[in-house]
Length: 395
Image 1 (cartoon, rainbow, N blue to C red):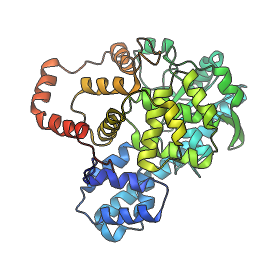
Image 2 (image 1 turned 90 degrees about the vertical axis):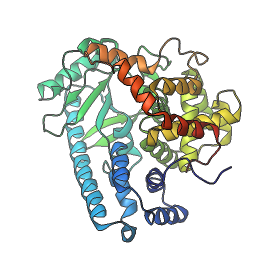
Image 3 (image 1 turned 45 degrees about the vertical axis):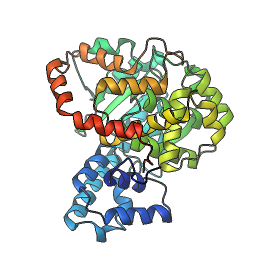
């Protein structure tokens, strides 16, 4: 195996800085900080992954190797994000309180659930929006309750898109934070490729105290499943990789997982390929505590070589945009998730985006412009071929 890693030092720094602290990682961070890094890229990557405060919390012990102006800027951006997260927690408390007054139980999903159960604070788990789950028959009442409290529709004009969607039209907070709230009717895309009984999610949910009100969070198994499906399906393995890896690792450090039950859950919900790739990548990049036996049970059948090549392609595309084509990205995703063999029918995640664009009349890229971009990007195709074809360590 060649010694040159797939990822550039800027992406490696972010990954090391967001892992569970260790002496070895501190040493790696010191070595990376000493390199002539492109700090603009570091900051943009951390901001895109919603990890700026997390990055700063690890870098502040290594500021001797960072240009002072750069360190000051990262620190300031991290402070702004931490303040925003404190406000997000306050807003969420108000949402849960208002819904409880209408006898509507609210279950926190994704970042909100993790910030409440796994991480020590909302600042430790930055997020761009809030997701909550309510019972399907109460979703419209919950939505109207918040509209009456001053929340406004995020996007207008394409509401028909949400008629069969798993969450209602997003709402924008009334306090000017540009915070979006999504009220889910179901945890997973519906109608969709997965089979999950929502009554099971509510049956296994755990109560948590949020301010002066009780909210609910999914069980650790359902939280992990949701992380895997959101990354593997909704984000197509190419978006939100940094925070997903961190979330999976933190969840498995915090909770004792019954792996036999989780494997069964992933298989009967038809999400085992999403689970395999999310967990395998989290273990490769962050040492997530995923046992070999679980990965063997979840792993799609095939040769190890192509699997490792797909992992390199997914990670490099997610963090540094290595994949030179949307069409190729869809082919790689299909090779990894195997929707036909997994029982997903004709559902594909990009069809959701196409339906959204049609409903809101968003024009697709002009064909000729796309062709010209591909021609100009021939060097990117060659680099990506090297990532796929030449075995290398990722980090």
